[in-house]
Structures are given as C-alpha cells and as structure tokens.
Length: 138
Image 1 (cartoon, helix red, strand yellow):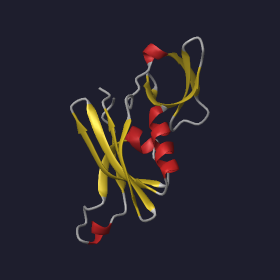
Image 2 (cartoon, helix red, strand yellow; image 1 turned 45 degrees about the horizontal axis):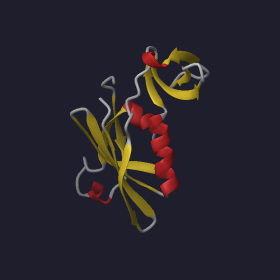
Image 3 (cartoon, rainbow, N blue to C red; image 1 turned 180 degrees about the vertical axis):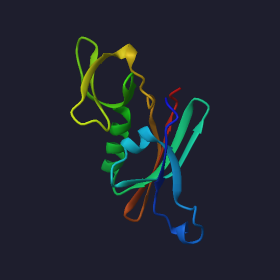
Image 4 (tube, rainbow, N blue to C red; image 1 turned 90 degrees about the vertical axis):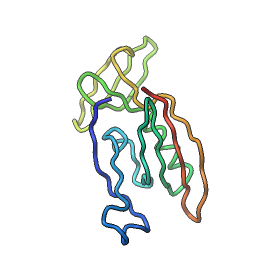
C-alpha cells in the first residue's frame, strides 16, 4: 500500500487541553472509507497489520465502515472502490477522486490493503459505540 497520509481532525474531550489532541494521522485509503457518523480516535500500524479505534453512532455505522474498508483496493491507476465482482474472476472498480471512471481488472492485479479485517471489541458508551478493529494485511 502506498504511504499516503492524511491528517483527519476528530473531536474529543482532550482537545481543549492540548492543541494536538484529537488529531489522528491515517492512510488516505482509511479516510476514503470513513462514513460521516464514524470518527477515529487511534490508528497504529505495526509489522504487517494495524489497529484502528474509533467511535460511531450505531453498530450499523461500524458495519458500514468495515464494508467500506473491505471494498477498497489499490489498482495500477490508484485507489479504487469495488463496484462488481464478476463470475469470470474479473473485478470492476471505480477510481476514487475521478468521477465516472470504472475499470475492470483481474484479481491478481489488485491489492486489498484491508484483507483480514476483524472487529475485536465494541463497547456502548451512552449514545456512542466505541470499537476496535485489527487487520493482518501485509
């Protein structure tokens, strides 16, 4: 996966205490899959995997985030979202950031950076759902 980084500001209670609190640096693919109702509180890449912690308004929002991550691919022309998986093994993808560009690739030409994504923990805190995801993708 390319080392594209994006700084995303997330709201948190400690923001008033420190100007750097509440800012989490995450790879661009992660930001592309982030629904509006989900915010990340921590991201850590270690070895061949990663840990993602965050908060969502509901369990459905966590599920939507996980589906979005599973549909992200790195193709020869850049970051893309899976549109269709065909029976013949082809995969149609839509390039992110380029409207109406849909391409077809063989599975071997795509890299799925979030393969092996697992939901490790969920805790309901008031109206929010805190979650932790891990991925063992290389």
